[in-house]
Image: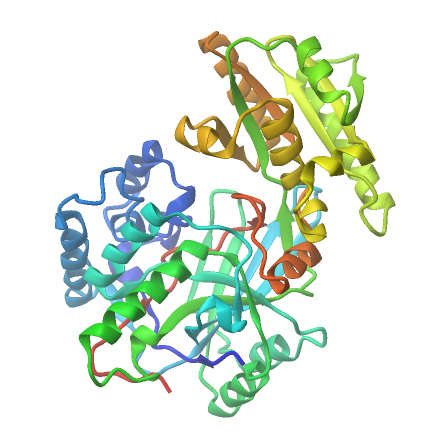
Length: 456
């Protein structure tokens, strides 16, 4: 089902730019506007200058910001700041990292071009919703630069690890690039140019589906760009570069594959005491107050209790959350009652199993009477992978204003099998339901779409 192909990757010339650590960045969508300057100050060749952060302005904004990027991109190619491989290759990509549990893990994958497929065809399967404003911005960047700067992170099934074993055995001895990111994760990239191995990998994927882990907006953007190119070209073919997208592919059985929870900081308009919140939640949850320590100790205890419950059950048998009220320095463990499911009538069973859906439908929408659109329009929800950072922001928000009541909800991670089940059923999870860690770095490798070339 899935078509994959090698690519002539573009990469930074370390003789020109110096350390790759100083030019490679996280994906654009996890970089705050406040952090942009720090990347450009670190190195004038920072990837942030190409894969610019999302457009903060209206859709009618001038194309100048995109044209400036395209000009800079081609300038760097002309100056040898960027190089392009002469021979198509697959790229073996490893990440060594320390999991929050303390374990040292290695995640392995392959970077390739993948033939585009509409979601309805069942070849490439999404699990999260997308937003038109983001797609519009990314489409203008892709159409102007004719380059894919960020990789889609996708999953596939390979219980026997056939693909990665083939690639690891055929990779070049010397890495073509290695960086250590801000979290201390070591990303390493190797070329694989062995034609026989590439053909075996291509054959393997012919009967496989791919599941998008990260990059739903980028993939949807590529589909929109393909539609544009089809309209522009009478002779558009399946081999056209615009019919393909660069992906990082990782087996869902890989022992180094990790999903971290994404915690929610909810700003409830007005004043809400913990006792008032308790009254609103008690019809649907059993509440247990965690006492006897600093806020950090309270939060750590809640997370430990949630983790213990998660590990003790082979299947998820109950939904647990932690909630922290920084204004009163009180922390509770919430265990969902069976009757809470009655509030999710009409929702498929696969979604009712998700903690993020329970939080959205039962707590935010029903108990707190905050609908999704209001939360989006008023920016009432902020997302954090680091619970300590989330708590710090919650406390500062509490001290800054009395117009809202910040509540920190700490979550369990969504499981891989839940992602697969939702995608197979053509369902959509709420925004920020998954946080695959570590992120794939932007700038180690990217892809040019050159007019006249064909993807084989």
